[in-house]
Length: 444
Image 1 (cartoon, rainbow, N blue to C red):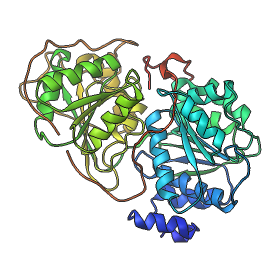
Image 2 (spheres, rainbow, N blue to C red):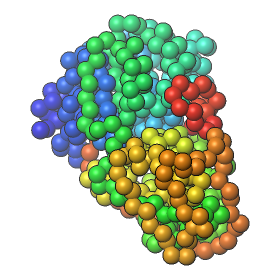
Image 3 (cartoon, helix red, strand yellow):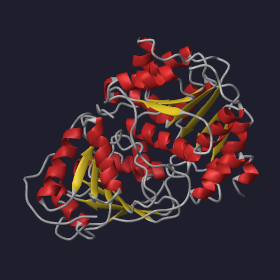
């Protein structure tokens, strides 16, 4: 199958060819014709399968086909949970639409509203926004959503799960009822899907992976370790290849910062990305990671949304996620576009229950390997009575010791995305109500 067979316009085919994209991914092949036909769509595919192009390409074609508009109101609205993902989508729209006259801008927090207001006053076809800053503009009457013809929710389950439901309902009330609505995400829990159905009209469904599945090219490894020795084990794992790029997940912002300091003292080039960082700092850290100026990026779950690297060889869970489904989102950063990936989890005794939940979710026996010299004093418990950290409980932090180590690697070909920045604001996600399972407080 080719992109041409999906009914895309010559200008889009030309842009795709210039970027070396020849064949659509399964989610693109399934979604693009349905979007072009005007259907509402509920699409599920794991991270790294090209979801952005699946809605961006038909959206650009529909907007360009309608001809120039005299109104300054946006005709399409794309909602995302984080600034990084908004910036990535903006870059994709620019790249795919380089031969079309369709304008787009981003609206997210961490930067001033003034430049965003100026762009909106001049008029723009597509607004890519995080819910919090979009509400700010609605309150100040600097954005009119009455002309929106297409609404896209990217990472839809995560936005609902992060506590954005009240904001989403308010935004949905401001856009026309007669619109096309597209929901894209890696996973859809049944309750999230039921909620989505309330504001969609007879949506078609596209699913290219089983629910909560991970890439088949990813190998999973668990290294049991005492909590007090986790940092040294992390350093040991990173030292196996000091040039390899590695994304490390920390449960808390404070923990991410402490890890970066420890790794830097140990001789590694590392940076943290989380909600307490300024937008400039987040953008720089991501750019440095993608260009290999740093080899280790330490991130919290929410801030990691939008980190899009085709051949990221390794993801390390320094802390296991409190909710098993988040493991799928984390691991979706590696094993992409036909490349092999490795997922390593450093698991202490009090995280045994979390590991049991992950294994149950994946319906797979994840390999559990002791690392010589780091064997835990208390073995993991994987029975039904396995302990879990309490909400907000942090792992004990070990005394500082020093060593050396590091990370790196290359590119692939299919429309996924790149990161950049442009415009302003998501609110602190963890300070909102959650409608699914409780999570530890977090900010994007």
